[in-house]
Length: 333
Image (tube, rainbow, N blue to C red):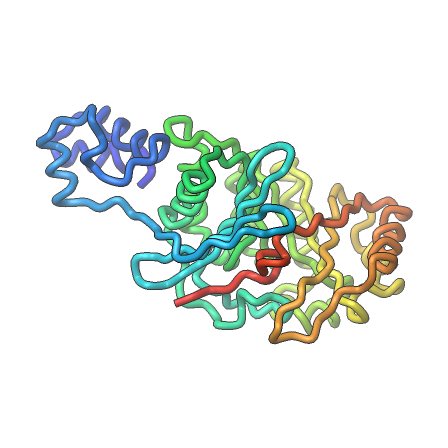
């Protein structure tokens, strides 16, 4: 619950509003797992809360640590028996956590393992927060940045994602600046426009993965609902509203979307946009035959775009040996 809602229910219970603030701080800053830990609350109130409320918690079912780069992949068990995965990565600026927003995904992108079982349900704000709190506690570190790029489509769960973001960044809680949060979408135009109205200082990352509608529709069914032209129009409007540069993700698939012709089309598509292009050499999953090109091929594609004025980077690969890289996360349960 967000703090204003928590204050209202405490007033309904005949309790002063400041008690809600104390509970909120225990939950979101102190990481309390039981009401008994909240030592500055009267014993009678702690007993009342324990009898009428519960503190949501997730359980580490499995933990894998990369022998290559130290990346950690968590399999988290939820209260209903479902499971999702989160990935903790270490950078020079601190720990970055990639969280899931849904149990599975219904978007159907053909290069992504998260979609293979379809969508079971969306995660609540508390289940998203718990990934942040539990990962930080296990790694004994403060999470410096959060990316909503794990299992699920965040804009397909915006009713829960928005309160998650507000609680995550609240001064009374973890107080993580939204400038250190990235939200990734496969291109739900209505969600992008709704998010723009919130005018949040986060980074919007749009999965493009193809330079034309024909090719994009083959790998991303969402393109049948919103074509590239409509998607880019929404991105331009997002920038005009928020003044936040949009980042585009592009998974390079050998022989599919990594040709010189594709690069030329992509450069023309993004020409004049205040955007950043992040190239991601596709990560193999057993159910698909997609493969990445060689290093020289990836370098040439990136150089072609840079030469034409597109700010381009190639994503550093982390956690591939434990199937924790982009497109490899899976739902469970």
